[in-house]
Amino acid sequence: MKKLTAVLADVLLTAASSSIFAATQVDSEQAQGMRSIGNVSVSNVTGSMDDATRQLSQKAEEAGATHYRIIGVENPGDSSQWSGSAELYR
Image (cartoon, rainbow, N blue to C red):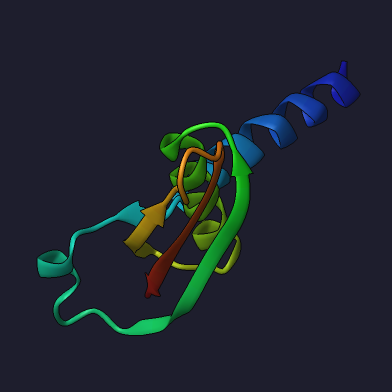
């Protein structure tokens, strides 16, 4: 029983900490006055624009950003491959 309680506590702590550290998307006006900590980019993302922005969000979180601003997302021609970049803030 103690082991099950410890495992459950670990799962709940992990879930809570991942939501605490989620980066929030902001626009250029909201980013005014925030400290930039760099950029991230993605390329050759198969799917939709949402898939590319989701990957940018994930990269922002992995980099420890509290906020990120999408600079651009593009799809060259009729390709299903997306590219994009975002600026990170803390």
